[in-house]
Length: 486
Length: 141
Image (tube, rainbow over all chains, first blue to last red; front, side, top):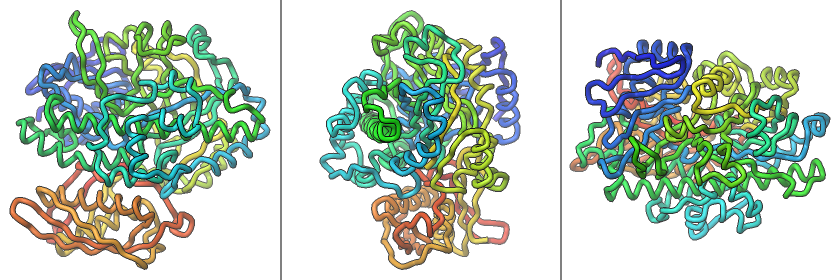
């Protein structure tokens, strides 16, 4: 295929003009550096690169407005990571596997504590050790809850409410969870027994790879109004939990790969990349997959609700707090496809919005936001690495108009895991971070090396591009103090 | 080399190489488990049987790796030795395989990262310059 070229719209927005089979243009948010990297990559790896993936998504039936990419764009499976695509069911729109991925509703839940940085400084090591013991993580870990087939079905239908009913957390938590922690439209019959069996012991486990639990403090506040609405102050201690739907989500992905490949052929949808297999939203296959994805979404909510309880318990024990003193700031996913109403060309439409490695970022005014956040939009969490800052940002009206209320989700890898393992040593890394005041506990030294800060893109560049483009706004910058890795 | 780990920006690719397609499948499985544990420390004490089918040989490889991940989570085991038989039945390919290993002991086995899923990305089956079979795909970590 011919070389893909980008047209500069502004300093932070670039267009991939509609060409060939594309139904809509591509639209990429990023600064010059991000775009240069993207073009270099598409020149070097012609078969598999993020720009080509933006193009391929733009060719899918029923896509509305544009195939979007956020500033943390990098190559994914079918969709680029940082990719957003909204599809109109009435125009033959599809649900595509690559727009969701294998870790359905992977996301971040952030808790705010009443503690300040100096309250925990002296006990950071003790806290990290305790969290490491209490939070099941790493290869083969199992959760506190051991479930039966019937109970798993309840998890899939009830989401965070299931964990709540088991005494994990407080009813108020639901208000501060996307979809109130329970998405509708799930028939557990659309999820295989194998997927459910894989999950029996995994509810309330963190996982491994890039999943983490991080104790952070607020280093700087950029947006006083939003920070006040969120109850954030300088030096305040927060806890971020990054994980998803665990084995259940992974197995749903595995199961539906074949089913959606058949569906793509059946409905005559050309497969440009195998992970981009899909089915029309309004088809039996599409409906089944949407239901399974919703089950995965609920499973992830239940998972993070359970993990939050373990964090609360640990903080209560170490610092003598009451569990309810640790509040949920917000819980939001970045690997989902969900029905949402958006304005397109002056009319309101119900669309299936895919966000693959992109956080939903509903700005001011959206009724889905909790009342306390309605004037500023809900917070989104941008994960850095265990050695660098993370950001709390928020959605904007511009983001609602241009990106279906979507935003960035993290720094994104720059170096492969194999290279990182050769370049970094887990033990050295742990010592180096300790010198910087960051206590790291990991279940695998090799795993730590793979997650070295040097293997990731610069979070500052990504956050600045999202902020300057106006689709997201910086609210606060966070610094890690203690990190637990799977 | 019977299996290779391929470079990939976010995840990793596994490639199995063998005299037959079956051997390549078995080596590919070794490659996948080498990402999770130190293979030589996993003793082939117990075994599980695996069956799967797919429309093509390539997708059968992804299904096979997927079945092994399923067995890992169901049994709590990790595996280091594999045997595979593939048969064509009409339009479908069927695989019967066996995996030998033992219950995961994270410390003794040197647990590394958890593989979430085998994917269709980079999926390829073919012959090497030396005439061996190879099969490969990217796995999601």
